Length: 193
View 1 (cartoon, rainbow, N blue to C red):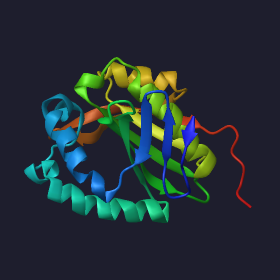
View 2 (cartoon, rainbow, N blue to C red):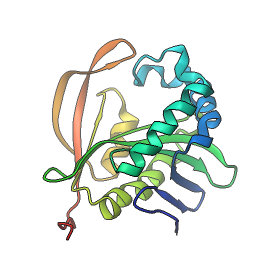
View 3 (cartoon, rainbow, N blue to C red):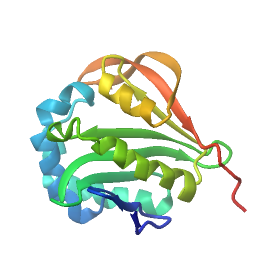
View 4 (spheres, rainbow, N blue to C red):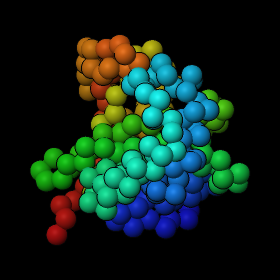
């Protein structure tokens, strides 16, 4: 495994999968990814306004995200096919809380063309250890809509355990959606010195 990660960036590659934190120069690539996958992702994401799909909006957002990376408050990561350099998806770790919670939330998306090829499982196998080993998280929470069986399967394969059910939990595509709540615990967690 190639690992160029640091405390402020995730950059890991194994086989044909590269996961790294987004940077301001990725604005065009990200905007294009979301434009190409708009219809496919729409049922699973919050309603997006027209600006969300513009390069200029992503350029501004990525400057702010880079600062969050530096402060250790969030990590917005991109998944690439390492051979073609084509963006396949996103992984985000948000709401990072350190002492005494040592927890964060996981979110992700995957291109329609990348479905069923194992990209997300491989990407999470690279990203989750970074959050546990480098960022010293004790708990990663993730949720999914009950009808999203692919997301359920990915989380189960990564060892996430069901913790509960939240009615009308998130506003997805202009509709309040129920979610299954899961988490993954870092069994090797140790307090930082």
